[in-house]
Image (cartoon, rainbow, N blue to C red; front, side, top):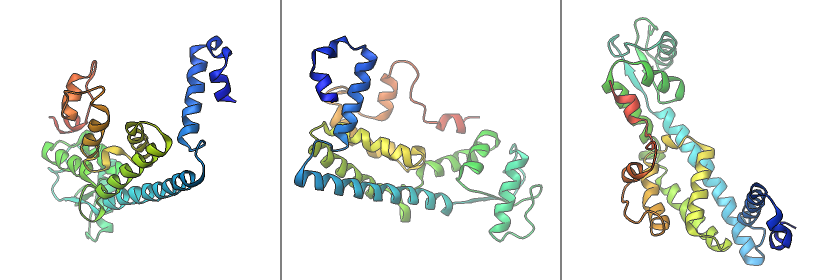
Length: 239
């Protein structure tokens, strides 16, 4: 029905907002494989099933990597500036990890890279070097070692490219859908060097048409009108 409306004489009578809604619905239907049949439909369904499993594994790696890292602070100077609530959380974590006599007042304090520890420490702690250390640990989680998501990312990109080919859409559109998938299952700032890992693929698909002279994410930030894309690094490590 929507395709018929799109091709009818009444299309031009619709408001631009109505046209955009219909175009979006048609795009979503096309991306869901509505127009595929036979072997193509079976392969599309298999890709969707594999992508769902990979997304779950990706999220589990991020969660496991978050839990696997910790930093124990043992002097008041190291935790100076931290609010009382954070001291209590970190002292309890230290006690649960086997540190006898851990207290909010005297420590030790066990920091993790989960949000209840990470955010208040980055916002309030006085030690710049420690803020930078925990922030970089946050950025690098699931980017190497036992919980490395790099292989999963490559496989998901390959599947998205194959899916795009089946659907007859631009490969770059499949990469954009992949990034959207990940943003729905985890915090992208906590997926290792995801921005860099995706850069070559995005550049290969999009740059010939839109950004032919830009070679790095930083150059794109510099060339983007208005406010640059904020990484957060400067916010948490200055001062």
